[in-house]
Length: 297
Image (tube, rainbow, N blue to C red; front, side, top):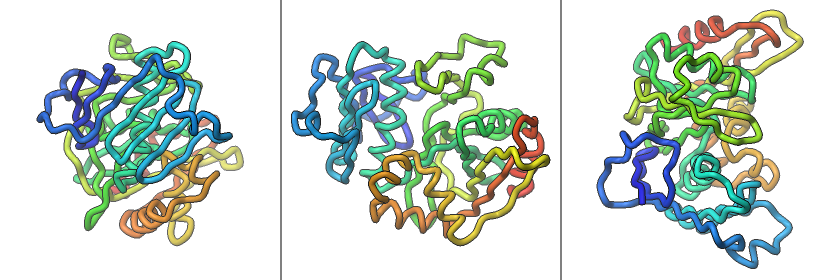
């Protein structure tokens, strides 16, 4: 049994996760447990017979993917029922993504699909579609002295402000970014549909929570020839937040739960949201970084 401190939650796990032992030292009080049942492909006959791929509530969630079934109970227990023979790395990526996203939902938090960074005394998120340049932008900012709190999935809890919790010192990246790294020993291949790698990066990890100030959303357009950006307001601001929820595909299909919509509205009221559009097939990373830094002054 391994123990981890992830997103300020003490977690026990049946399997090794994609995390170094450096973040495994924590008290014995466990707030969440991860259980893997390799020889049981049918977690519940009622679930298996439903013509659905997921259902969610505060008491019980389940989700079906090519990895198998995953269930989440009362914000405490994540159970995985693998199908076939997925590796621990594949199971780990599944748990650290969808498993924790469902867990955050049950614990009344928001899970955002993004990279969370800290610099100039402010925490901020970089969001965007796959291939928009999130990883490249994040690594360029790390080279400038910024630090990261999370990659791929952020956990926000609501207080008088929204607190961005530190995840673990691993970053996901596409193959084209991974191939630029000289030290390949820090890379682990994640056999996902999107062909991604996990990169161990403790040197740039910010292991402390911070209030969130900004969300920067990067997009690509073939209709522009230069970088464009604007600060969003009103419904556009709320839509940008909703579009970047980790569980957005499920919520869009089945309707946003009331507590999620309420938190998204509060979040959009308490942070600034900036939409950055970059021209297709142009290297605009330096320009994007300059725009982000101009807001953080």
